[in-house]
Length: 156
Image (cartoon, rainbow, N blue to C red; front, side, top):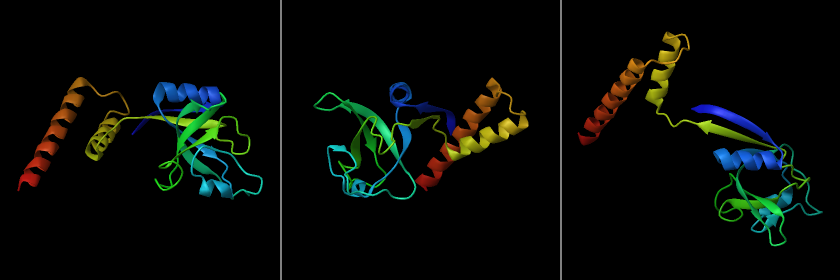
């Protein structure tokens, strides 16, 4: 369940968001040579052409190159056969790919489907007011009962 989000604009704000809350999703322009990227810092080659649309990657951090420039470290969605085990690097500020225009950070609360349904029912019943401590105890009891029932089923 998404608890909060942040749209960080520009490299410095994206860095702050990653440092504070972890990876961000970023949209980028993709060129044909991106498909064959294997290692190092990706940069568009002269003969590569742009695909229609955009591509989303997860920026997980940044590093310094040998010449002292900053580069993003990102995870692609194309599996471990692409790039460096599914990861790549792109120079910060690369105007051809626009990866650091903005990054979307999200704070999520791990929650089971049953907890989500119970929380939604409670919110509806209380008119979106904050749950009381007795409601939270009821949720804990309900979840404990569900876990115990699942254990019994697994043992049978």
